[in-house]
Length: 147
Image (cartoon, rainbow, N blue to C red; front, side, top):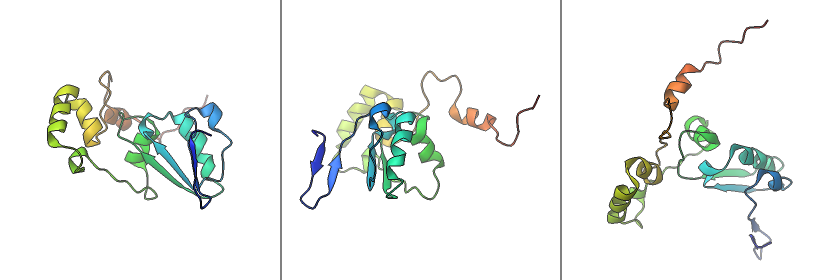
């Protein structure tokens, strides 16, 4: 298809649709790359994970943050030792000039800049409670009452 590339050695790269309903059925994947993972819906992420079951293939989640929500944030914050986490801010990239960053900081505002360029998960501006407070209020040690 238009979104695929076949190499002379038989390897291939296949671009898949970003729709949970139409992505199912692809299997025997050796490397699954989820680009802009923080913006991929949880249902779509859960639909692609079985693609790795047969091969035991690798899963890479690549993204800048997009708030404190979703599988990408959960994996970054709570993922265990099976995840290798790499954070590279814009200041660490030699290809990005500091004057461009200064201009974008002024244009975007501090919150958006910190998320896009400094890899910080920022609370939603319209959030009533900070995620840390919500998480602190949740416990799995108590069981619901049985009637």
